Length: 113
Length: 116
Image (cartoon, rainbow over all chains, first blue to last red; front, side, top):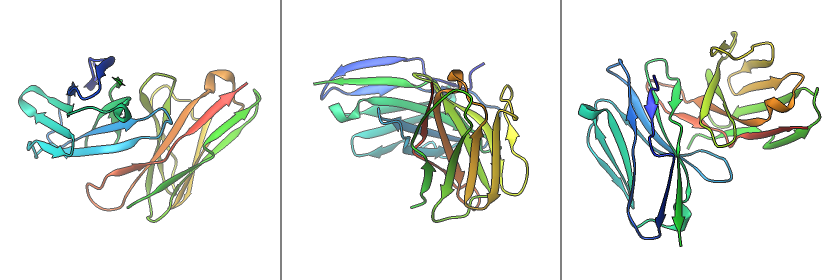
């Protein structure tokens, strides 16, 4: 079974629309970390957020916000007022006690002008 | 902030060549580094965990004789793809753990390997 599931393979929205990227995870550990990374066409991974399992507070950073819900094992990512520069592949990821980062399959986001 | 440098950023070479990729932590010491591989339009898959001064730990299905990892110092891990073939063409990316409890990993910018 996948430990990190990103059900949305590809999403296209028109610029200025809000978009939410879904992430569902699976772990038996009580201590774990969740991440979101952005991978633009150039390939490098851009770190967006790391959240530990004991911190369920939602976070907002500019146009980005994250909703962590342990009850549904979800860590969803919302981009508000999307821009063309947000076009990229976004990976949700999980690390457990062994520190290995397990990536979801990614969601390819297209922001159309 | 912590920086991880990966070199080269791109390699194109003939089949049968061995290719070495370097991963350096520039302003911190990393006892543990990780190597990932990403095929086109796919996710990043962990290949191995590189531990300074000891043998790397490989994930299931990764050939250790094919992908040689050396972590000889606290700031450098190398991945050598031996006798590379076209199916080894991929994007290879490393990460390094910053020291201390529960510290984040930092990723290099990746190496795009193309075997002709």
